[in-house]
Amino acid sequence: MDKHSFARPNEAAITHLDLDITVDMAARRIHGTASYDIAAKDADSIIFDTEGLEIEAVTLADGSAAPFTLGEENFLGRPLIVRIPRGAGKLAIRYSTGAEARALQWLTPQQTLDKGKPFLFTQGQAILTRSWIPIQDSPGVRITYTARVQVPSDLMAVMSATNPQQRSVDGRYAFAMKERIPPYLIALAVGDLAFKPLGPRTGVYAEPGMVEKAAWEFADMEAMVTAAEELYGPYRWGRYDVIVLPPSFPFGGMENPMLTFATPTIVAGDRSLTALIAHELAHSWSGNLVTNATWDDFWLNEGFTVYFEKRICEKLYGRDYAEMLALLGRQDLERTMAEIAQGPHPEDTRLKLHLEGRDPDDGMTDVAYEKGYAFLRTIEEKVGRERFDAFVRSYFDRHAFQSMTTERFLALLQQELLGPAGITYNTDAWMVGDGLPADAVKPVSDRFTKVEAEIGRWTAGTPAAQLGTKAWSTFEWLHFLRHLPSGLDPKRMEEMDAAFRFTGSGNAEVAAAWYEVCINNGYHKPYPAMDEFLVTVGRRKFLLPLYSALARTESGRQEALAIYAKARPNYHSVSVRSIDEMLGWEKVSSVTM
Image (cartoon, rainbow, N blue to C red):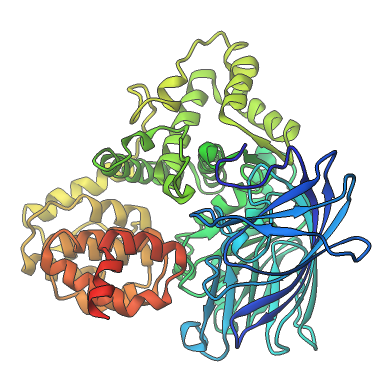
């Protein structure tokens, strides 16, 4: 049983969803009918997850009403319990979304790039799909879906399914996802969108003012798909497209099948941040094809995906590129684990999580991503890449469109890889052990060693403009900023900024790292640019370190609260939840109101 779902799919499960909905952009509301094929066996009821939904009617296949009740509400929402006759095969629910549907972000024209028309996007992971569709909202449930979506005629709708490439005349769109996917991957975006193809099966959607820039940035997408297939087998989803969303999107990307949702912060103008596209593409195998059965097994999605991402990047851009990326990930992991160890749940540094009674978002940290990657990388080095690749290819092929638990995966690992290779290995040290095991493989980067030498030169007095930085990649700049000494003199920071123009950089990764250095060293000159950055960008990866750094002092916390008061309406609920808790926003806002 999934601790984060009310549903009991072992008793009665949905197998197919057919949506017929209208998106009311003015009222910020979705309403319509969700119809289901169900496999009920001998059950006399079926349970759906809901959060904030208004359930208007439930009917059976013959049109007769099905009795239903809504259970008590908690942080998981409310169960919708529908009485059904034994052997029932179909069910329809007429409903509308509530005003505070957490999966939905409604944006005014001013919150978009082109500032002409409103925008809507959904974010279902981990348990938010239930706030816009009544659903059995567990990653262990897999369904196909079709949808008919009505939007204003001057807007376009796209979903994690087959998609139009041209705007319809009447705002009516039809979609089909023929493969079985978990409900958190059902996704919708509505806005003023244009499409540009990149290859025979790849393309990009974005606002008209962004589409050409994004198409140039993502020129390697078709090559990435080919590289991924050469590694671990055929791409099974037909097309692979990307939509670049407005900047409030809370993640770097979301691997919605056939249509990755991506942040505009990866459009840097130099193709330096597109490893994120490799990551989301890799999810087409790890996560979308073989999915964590529960959110306690989240590392199975992300650890495999980070590993696969690095292999795609190595194949296209070389080993040193992939190793720099891996070493930055290790730095993120060590920082995250140190923070978790000081918090209320130090056990969250383990790969196998125990999130009962907690929001599964709590487990979506660098531990799942980077410790999961380190585990797989360590196994690869123990058995050899050839053996490891054969195992992974077989794993994806034989378990395609299935869910996987940690325990089942470890049994497969022992039976099919470690055992035949004659290797005895303590996997428990990774799964239920705190922190990183001592034998965890650590990436090595000669290019980063050279960066550290330049830091030493600057620390010793060499002017920033004379440092050997000419050919540096974004990864080298990040390593540089992360390893500057503490207690920097404002004049030297000003000199550095004048040489490298970090403040206001169009590269969001570099800008965010620089602003954190400024906060930690009390250098306030870039704060107006940082203020604008925090108000504009909603990506949680950048927001949390900056607000956290500000909040370490009382004066900084007041600065953070002032910025957050302006920025909060621009953020998705996923980001809001984290920052509200960090800054004690509920208490502050209740005092000021």
